[in-house]
Length: 433
Image 1 (tube, rainbow, N blue to C red):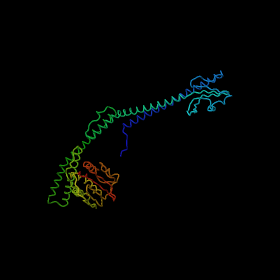
Image 2 (spheres, rainbow, N blue to C red):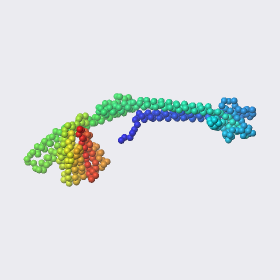
Image 3 (spheres, rainbow, N blue to C red):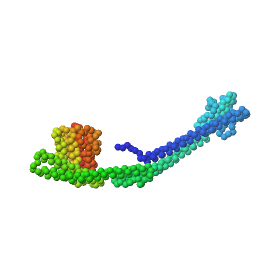
Image 4 (tube, rainbow, N blue to C red):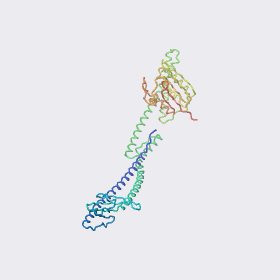
């Protein structure tokens, strides 16, 4: 099962929205931080200047008792009156301090206090920052609202942009799905601009064209070769049959002619199967109105493949556990079974080969060298042979069986046999009721 993946459009939408919202939050936080820092710095500098001016003015005129400025109040305490200094101010160093004070009614007031402690006089300038706190709170709410508005706009713009950005890719995917369903080859590049998506569409067109030409050449070659081989195979078969009627044949020559006749019949069946594959892969319908007795085909295949056993001490067992009839040409069934049974005969050096005809399948069990479980599925690929397999062979027989099974809806499997050797299974599609 493939891992879950988000759609590309969703990833673009989420990325843009998260980027915009994060940027808005960072901007609001930065604005709040800079505003508070700059405001405190400006007020602190102003208070330091004011307290110095207040102290100088007091030294010039001791009658000075405070500033008549809004929100700002100056206080001076002489050496004789240090005990009158508010308790929260006594231990403060020179400079500007922010102080929070709890009022008798339970409310909290915050103010900024500039302190200058001379040997004989302590000067204090107090600035009421309650209104500044209110403005900061209002600014915070305003920035939160702005972040919410910009976040909503980011979501809307992200959704619109993701659709706009992904529209060519979405169109390309839609056209590819339509082509896959219809099976017709239509150019994609004319429907797209000369951008990256257009280049992908052009590359897909070129690849599809070359692949179609290659497949067509392969199908035409298979059909031509299969068609042209029919005549010489028919000549070989008829000549063998005619020679077998001669009364002067020796037993040895008669046996060899029978082998030639069987081989020509097998070649004719292979040609018929290849022609069916070629026509089906070119869009034609496979022939399924022919009813074939599988048990009879198995018996013929055993007789046809028996020469591969030679003088090997191998016993062949045919077990008819159930009658089995399939709707397919006999040549197709024969080619599929001949490859499976022929491999069992070829690679079994001694022991037994058992062919079981069951209700809807045929099992071929042998006592040969067996196969690796890792190689079982790969053996149906073209040109792949089992590990340690010796002798001639191109690794095409099982690939043909696989193609025939796909054509008729059958299943074929290879697996190691627990007792040693291998087991092949050809399971036919059940009849529709």
